[in-house]
Length: 378
View (cartoon, rainbow, N blue to C red):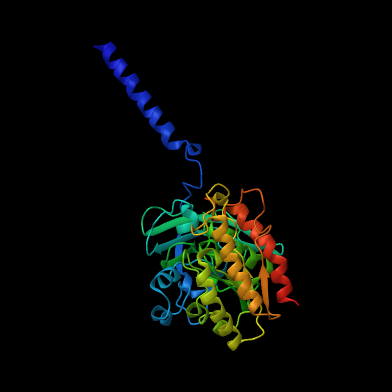
């Protein structure tokens, strides 16, 4: 009996020792991106700050004004509620930044990352350039909350928060520590006077950059520090005057029309002359850039049927139609970009043969940068 009591006593002491070891061993719970430390956070409505990347008279997180709903095709209107190219500018001295956002939908596209389609990424301005800080990774629900970064040195910084590329945002909040401050940007940095405006396809919208800040439009915005408005409409960029009429009130400095990949040759011959005439009737001095369709990677292996979308002959017919409209509208303010060397020649610049991966977006950005800089500073 005494032997049994001693054994039970030993077991009891051992149990207490193990429990204390688990409870009091602080290094057992390590900080990680997936398990950030608890902070006293206060959330602020992002619409209180500065939203960039949208045309005039547009609601907070949409790309076209309300009146466009009755003017553009339903597919275009639906896509205009995706927040591609929209960003929030703010200043804060918080050492932790969290994001809480509500999506209109939470769909995952097979050729895109969830961060690009439904998440956000954050940049700060330091040493004369925008530097990547971190991402807000979405979950599977409509309401999401994520820590972008914690444990920064506590000093005032300028931030640029890029919104999801392929979903709409109902509500967006920026979380900072309760003892920190947040405000509209204290430095303009990005010039919003006469923005550069892209009107294009899914490639323009952002498929398939790995995160929102890596589209070629976003790369250009941060490099030249000039507002860039992204009117890419997946599968629905068709050179339509009904869309362009909402571009002109923003008094753009450059308009890039990159709708060729979505447009049948007949559509180009019909829509583009009307659109060019409309732009020039409003402002006959604004530079207009026409961009050919890339050759899709799979075209190298498809039977070359000129009636089949995506073949060499079909793409050539699209580009021939674009070239014809260009030549028929000889004007010093209309510029033409061929697809030669647009994203390189090694066939490594797309995710699926069509949509740009990060390499493709970076090459497109590098190609366009000197052209746009020259048009901005003739």
